Amino acid sequence: MARVTKEEKPVVQEGLTGIKEESEKGELFFKIVLMLMAIAFLGVVTYFVVDAIIGDKTPVIKSRYDENNYVLVSDVEKVNNHENFENITSEAFKDALDEYQYVYVLLFNENNIKDHSEGTQDRQEQALNIVDSLMKKKIEKTLTVADLDEDEEYVYYLLDDNTALFFLDVSNQANEGWSDLIDTSSGQASSRNFPALLEIHNGEDLNWFGPWKAADKNPSAITKLNEILEDLEN
Image (cartoon, rainbow, N blue to C red; front, side, top):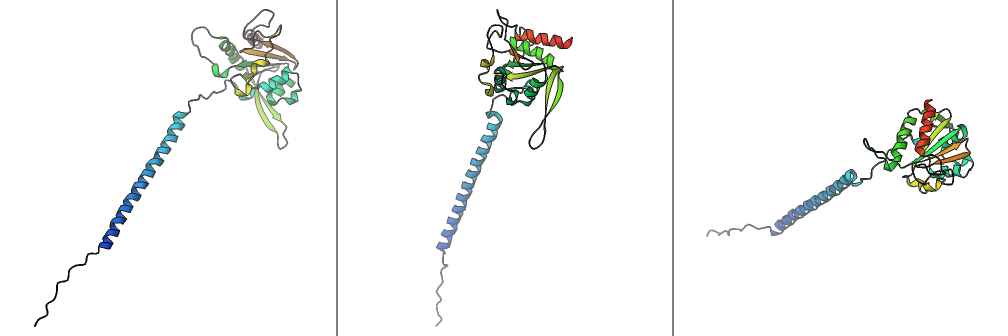
């Protein structure tokens, strides 16, 4: 008698199929996480780029005149107090006080300069227009300063062989208290305001000129600057 062979049923490997499905789900989850991280990173980079471009709207103030012709309140205070010039930190200012008969310091607000092509100009604009004409005549001076390691050179500018003009920006935070410098006693400046001009004659005699003329006071800074310009042109 022939043997009856039973038909074998295929074995379904359920365990392996489950592992494969779990692996595919894990890969999908990992891809989603990477995509979210990439989107987040891109967002952070975009934020900082945009912030760098438009975030800081603080205007950058460019100095109107040459950098080494600017002085600080601390140095002008030393002159007001008739201290030894060796205590002055500005090498250019120190040199000018030692070497030249007339040294001037103009106090003005670098952060409040207007440009009126028409109409009446304010006192600061009038003063600066005269100073612009004065600085067109400037003479370069190279100053060599001895240092422990090696000598350093500074360049600043004179108006002529006898006169130097420096500037004090009252909008500079380092110049807080600038108005206390201005002498408003009899025969001096009309007001503790800008534009104000300090004249230092032979390193000792001080005269302050205020924004306008007042009784028992010096002429205005504008008048004095015009006198200096006229002297240079003659």
